[in-house]
Length: 576
Image (tube, rainbow, N blue to C red; front, side):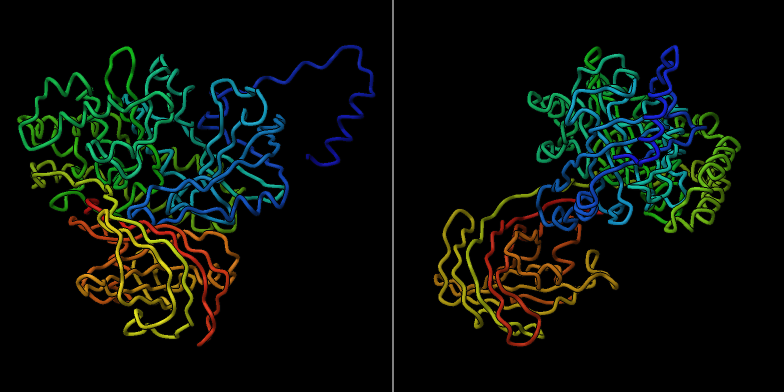
């Protein structure tokens, strides 16, 4: 897959007939590739059609907030890669990311070496993780965050910068992060046989343990280790700190939370029940937190902690309950002070920013033109961070909610499946139950539902909520409404669909989310979007699933035909 010059050069060398074979190239090693002073060169070559398919894959971001499991739409594609001049053939490449880092022009990438062939080309790494820095426009947030954790004596990945090209096209400067997999576990803990879990929008609550993604021992773990920890923190009884200390190193945990606070890691475990790994070390039986997804830190842009303090986030279960245990508020305060006296060294951090900028500047992508300004903002944040935290510590303690945020979990209420036919309406109709034709089977609360009238309508979607902000691609709303035969209760369902996918009408499944309501008319616009995407404390009902269209159009009177396969859910928790 590499260019003709390389092939020709190899042939000439082979024909030269040197009396002795050239010494083999030095093996690639994690220590060299993750050297902070080194800019890694990653050149990927793959079929253009595969690249187009890879970059267009995306998660259906709103689905999680409607009660669906976080989807995994990314697939591996074959490629060759040249890493710092060393060619590794038949690797696998896929897109990565959750919500904010999604990008179709220069996506974040994983490169796996042994998906197609048995090979281990890098000593100490079994894959490359390349983050596109879409949210880390300074190019330094991830590096500085992981450095802070490591300098605090905590387990954390190493990272540096990489220049990435795809089929000769410059994709710009990525952050190269040490993957949290077995090689890292072996290096940090001396043992990689334990259970490793990735935490994404989840917490140690009996209803959400399945949301921890097992990344080692996937087929054997029963999550009993997580359940034991969840049981310690369940309810409102005082914590047994001695029991907690048998499962978690409390000193390390307090340092972990304090590092998240220093870096304003609002989207981490303590602040958003997100972006962390948890490893249960076999030799001790204790769990250890590792940071991940640190691309939006060192900034005032994001949410603050309780009582507007930036010295503590306490929304997560462990952080909140431990903070309120006797003596732990003062212990946390002392931990934060010790880190300000030790691991947080402004001069070192600014020197690292200067060095990273110098490395990156010649290789930036056109989308990275804001790097200098963003890095300057990080410098300003660092310059004022110590005084800000010391002022908050002088007013200690802050007012902290007496209970943690309930993590998001879902109760399934029923299903809606079948076919429909409607005509396009330019505006939302007053009563969709009187329009179109529907042949649907609805099961709700364990019972089949019969209707005396049911209908369907398709029209322009005008929501302006979190997933439908101004400037977003146009969307279509599909509404089903019916009057129950037993009690005359109105049941209404609304789902939002990308207009381009709608008009294509390929009969392929389109992931959708939306609203489900009982006893009130369906509403359009901003209120509908809030119902599907808002993360309030109380339960809210929603639908998620697939819709297929075999005919569609957005001119008045055009036919809209297809089928629905939806799950009806009640979503709990997730309140900010």
